[in-house]
Image 1 (cartoon, rainbow, N blue to C red):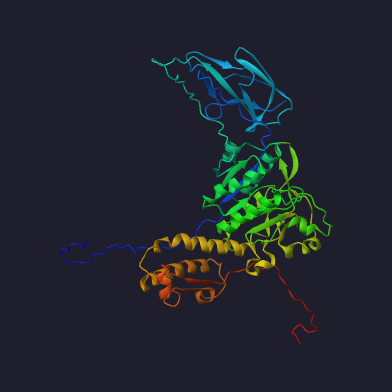
Image 2 (cartoon, one colour):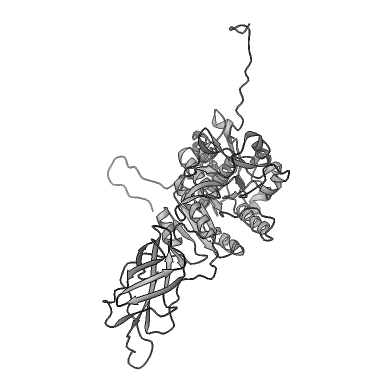
Length: 500
């Protein structure tokens, strides 16, 4: 509505342009899927009897202490908040967890308000032990019948374990331990914990984590990841190529298909743990397929394991995802995540030589090597191979993902706008301004913007037949920078210092 002006003077008004500038999307958020078999071990289930009040992970777990042998004496839960309540210690009514994961107890003896629990094997030193108990509560039945209302525990929650197939956002390792437990001797739990710890140790700041009970559930987890647009890196720690497992090839194929379908993320796969480096079939053992949306790293890393108090070998995908995030934040997504130290790694399963890497690198196997006293990522390729020579390097693939996703999200305002030269000009201005920022960051090759990119949206790209179909078409060309994988110096000897 027009503004009425009454006094002479200068009036400055803010007018909306109708479209916001394109902002670069995040590229460092990871999604981890851990395959953790339950082996029949579950947390205690509250009884159906409505006169029982369960005190479990949702209410008030009992902090028993830390591991220091097979037996542990502790105090039973306080019952002062209830008018009449007894702690239930009947068989099957209680349970225990060590570092957040269910552990079966051999026996539980109680005398008064004290109890002694005995495990078949001693929990690791400093491992956190939690007990889960029920209280027998006298709950009056409402007048006229119905279900008794039980009082709720008011003590703070100390453990909030995520259910199977439940995705949780973690911004530090403490949050991961709250939802999924700490380091463990269980294989699946150990791989997931070390992967997430390695992610945060190497520079990661945000990741979504989900645990599944079996390999066939990985597909369901990937389906949940489809709804999380923020995820840019996908890893399933320990999901290695294995011809002996019939379903493994299919599972790896689903991970690849997920990234190729989403087009805004890449998968980081682990190489096999053990391999015959002299075998002529080594490459076939390591490489499951060709895809420029997937990068594979070999060999496994040697790290310290708090659960066993010794050094073990773990898959590198979690640490590599953290390096992706670190490089993105420090340099930019266009910088290859290579020639970077792997923090937390003290050794490697195999110390590869240059000659051994010569046979792996051209095929897209990214090697991790011990160089000059450091464990360093010494490869920057995708598994694309010759299928797509433009996407040989993982940094190029991730930069293109970044450009596509940023332009997609930043031009939503154009949908249903009148398809006219005015719209074309606004699109050109928006995209050009964004690419100019990208070029200035060093992601595009060229000494001038004209050499680095072009944006074309005019009558030529939008003829009448395209407009009749409701389409507005913009052509964008970019000259992306690629890593200097081979640094070559040509040295010759001359008889004359002046070059004669």
